[in-house]
Image 1 (spheres, rainbow, N blue to C red):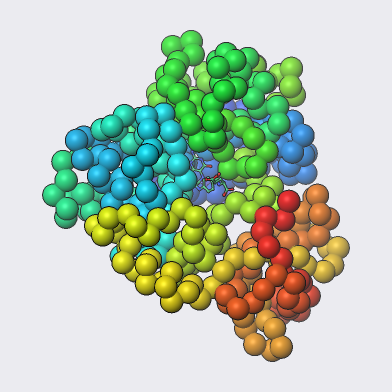
Image 2 (image 1 turned 45 degrees about the vertical axis):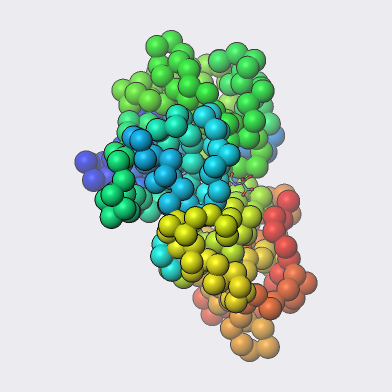
Amino acid sequence: MHSIMPSARLRPSPYYASTIAEGVKSFTTYNHMLMPTGYGKPEEEYWRIINGVSMWDVAVERQIQLLGPDAGRLAQILSPRDLTKCVEGQGKYVALCNHAGTLINDPILLKLADDKYWLSIADSNILFWARAIAAERGLDVAVSEPDVSPLAVQGPKAEDVVASLFGDWVRALKYFWFSETDIEGIPVAVARSGWSKQGGFELYLMDGFKGDALWNLVKEAGRPFDIGPGNPNACERIESGLLSWGGDTDDETNPFEVRMGAYVDLDVPDDVVGIGALRRIKEEGPKRHQLGALMEGQEPTQIGFYWYDIVKDGVKIGDLTNHVWSHRLEKNIGFALVSADVHPGTDVVIDKDGEAVRASLRALPFI
Ligand code: THG
């Protein structure tokens, strides 16, 4: 095996030393950082998310901060979701689109104050994008990447762990809402969110020197609940239908194609980037949509590096984007980005690197 060296261009997370101490076995890169992708017991790590509680270094979910009198205007210009009713302490899942209506990121937007927003981004360079749009529109807003690093606590027992640390008030937090607080001198924002459908919280650490201290506090509080280290889980998120931008999207994907149409409000102002294109796409009808593919065979799939063709009657009708062995369905499953005229119930063949695999398409989520 090669080794990879963290550097200023491949930044370690504030939890890096803790994840090494926990025995992390692999990393991926995301937003120019290293993110743990496993601790050596994939199946145990999966079931812990489903049945217990798991803690994840997701510091790679970087924040792009919009600060200043025009912060709210910039947030709305960047996102075709109506933000007029978004209040302080509220988060929303939003699409960021370019001028062609192509999805360029799918962050959670957090409103910290009238003049302060965070975009908790997926893996693409929104710092440059937001700065460029702000400058071109002549807005009075500073765009930066602040020292903020989320730690996720996910699973059905996550609420008990987070409540035992911060108090029972966290139980009343609504989905994507958050509150700024501190614990033993460590400043954090506590949010009900996270990239799983098993429930949980994200602790947005606001002091990068306190990562190991926060990790240890969560680990201690989680001990009675058998907490263990984990990471955003491919199997759980595909079963649950969560989108991975860049994994399930390509350079032409618009929000309507990947089940994000509910987050596009066509009557937002005309100065919202991409809204003209999105109105046109909506009117013409999107060319593709996203379904689930349930595959035949009992041999757990190996994660592929490329999309596979989905074929019907000898004709390509779309792509299998990400796929995984489902521990709960005991079948290989994946996301299918297919022509809009292909419906759930359709039987197809997936050309998996030369191997023809039969599959049936169905609506998402799987579970
Ligand atoms: N948490 C934080 N930042 C993030 C992610 C996160 N940044 C990167 C990435 N994940 C952003 N993408 C997503 C994608 C889906 C969801 C959250 C972030 C999600 N979707 C639910 C769904 O689709 O069912 C809920 C959507 C809704 O109800 O509005 O949770 O995880 N900090």
